[in-house]
Length: 65
Image 1 (cartoon, helix red, strand yellow):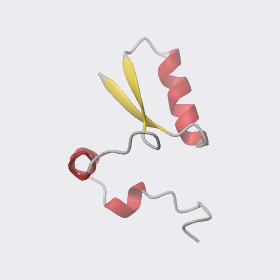
Image 2: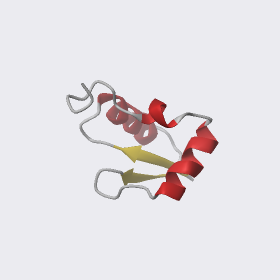
Image 3: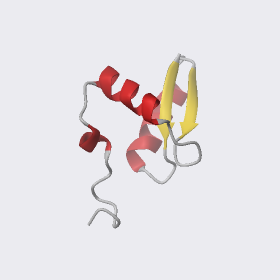
Image 4: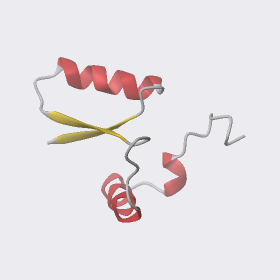
């Protein structure tokens, strides 16, 4: 089953969710701001996505600047 880590404030996240809603695929929504992933979950996601931690950061947020 597809899992989407969703942030309702994020346009890309809303667009991805809209695509899932339009598909016939089953999915679950994880609102990561309400239920943050554990360190182990983050490590697992990074490995599956073949990403570095910095690539998950929303660098356009005011808090980043």
